[in-house]
Amino acid sequence: MKLKLVAVAVAALVPVVALLAYNEVATRYQRNLEVRAGAAQAARQASSEVERIVEGLHSLLIAVSAMPSVRDLDAAGCSEALTSVASKVTNIRTVFVVNTQGRPVCGSVPVPELDFADRDYFKRAVETKDFVVGTYTKSRVSDAAVLPVALPVMEGDAVKAVVVTGVRLDWLQTRITERGVAPGNAVTIADGNGIIIARTPLAERFVGTIIPATFQPLVHSNAPGVLEVKSQDGTERVLGFRPISLPGSPLYVSAGFSRDEAFAPINRATLINTLAIITGALLSFLAAIYIGNRFLVAPVHQIADVMERWRRGETTARTGMAAKDELGEVGSTLDGLLDELDCRRRRNEEAEEERGLLARELAHRVKNGFALVQAIARQTFYRSDPERFQSFAERLTALASTYDLLLAKDAASSSIHDIVSRAVDAHAGVGSSRFSVTGPDVVLSPDLALPLSLVIHELATNATKYGSLSQEAGHVSIAWEHGAGMVRIIWQETGGPHVTPPSKRGFGSVLIERAFPVTAAATRVADYRPDGLVFELAFSTERVA
Image 1: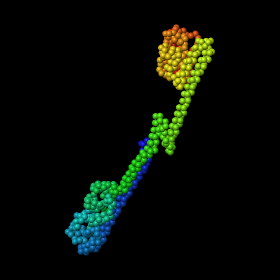
Image 2: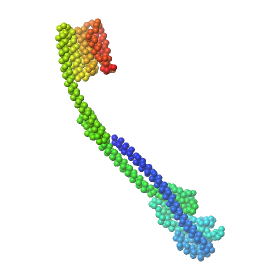
Image 3: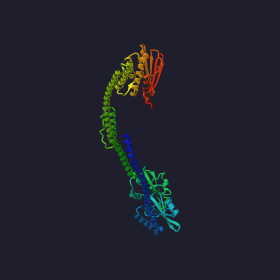
Image 4: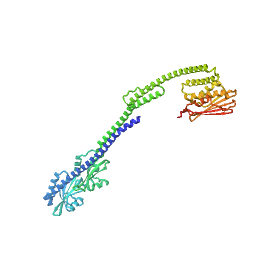
């Protein structure tokens, strides 16, 4: 019963758990979309800011290249102008104008003995005749890390000189750091070779290093994208990236959102919900067990205990339950049934006692009736025909003896052994050796016991008058067997006079033939052997239609 109640509680919790699980999956899916969209948006914003910085430098170099002193390559005037410009722009340190051979013509600082001819960005500016953004470079003037940019000064279709400057990477790092990122998130900016020029957090660890080969394809990808990766610092992130191949995007930019931080509120909610479900389940199970014990198991056990006590004979046992609910109604109905059974039992006992009294009264009256009939017969027949009177009296005595046997057992049943013994005792005396009685203990109903007693008495009477019992050495064997609902009795006489079949049928023969009811399906076979009569009687102990 308890397991069934727990199963009911589990069945009630299953829809709730299923709904919470569905909400969990849907919430995580929606959050994943939001994080991916946020990573892509953060990458676009960081890329836009880098593009504005580079575009600002582009505009600055255009303005510088348009200065007359620069175009005329006037060293003194050019240096004075560049010094003024550099002092007003905080994201650069120096500006130089370099001739086509790579030698500085003028600059914002005293012109050192430098040669830019080996710098890749200088070569590309001369070759492309366009604005060029270089790669991570250590400045030969300040030995600081910079991102160089160059713009050719054109004279017609020919390159006359190249204006060169560089973005201070410490300034760029400060700018990225000031923007700030949420805990666990990261922003990375790399040049065309995949060298990191700015990163937050852990700039000191990663700036100047090359992006691992695993992520190099992202730097030169054909389109921006979002994917889930494990960053170099070991954090699982959703990474939005924009490659350098995009128009107007001179640098690679990526923005990564930590999955742990992004899903932390959902994970907390999941943990709370899980604990709530477990707590609710435990409370439900405990409630189911308590309620089951209190309102189901205990009443059922109480009803079963009352029934067991009643079966053991404790007829006063009752549940005492009121019909407040279904089990209470069952208990109340059971009490009513037990009251009714107890009442019927008392009535049956009273009726049985009354029946016994009536049976004893009937036996007394029957005996009185037999005595009265015998007295009337004596007065009527004894003097005129003593022999026939004696035969009638003996039959009447056998009938009375049979009634004594039946009434002694309350007319319920009698065994064949008792019936036969009572019938023959009147002819040979109790315990006589002239009769042998053998057979199993078979109990007959009253409607079979009475006719069997009359038949045995009639056979004993005939044996006394004409058969084996008429002589001192005569003997009668009575044996029976029982099987398949049939009783087969064999009466066999020995030691008597020579036997011949009777010439006519007397009253005894008719009585023997008609004593049993039709429903007994009785059969009789008489074999008048010279050495003694053998009579076989068979009848059914079950009623036959």
